[in-house]
Image 1 (tube, rainbow, N blue to C red):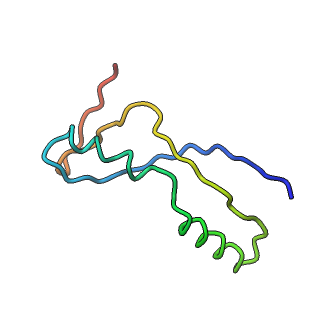
Image 2 (cartoon, rainbow, N blue to C red):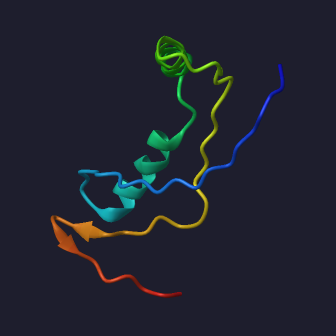
Length: 82
């Protein structure tokens, strides 16, 4: 069976409580890492149950570029252009 590889751009909003922005930025990449085998297995099982004949073999995420701060305590932050 052929193996297909797709690249997909993902935009995520990660909500973090921390003492300051520096500490908050440290933990964001941790939630954007490779899903574990249990998550992949569950996705494959769900897809098979609805009759989709494809199997996810792996998923990799990486953070590209800087993290953009959008708000602090519910207040929007103006984005700076560097």
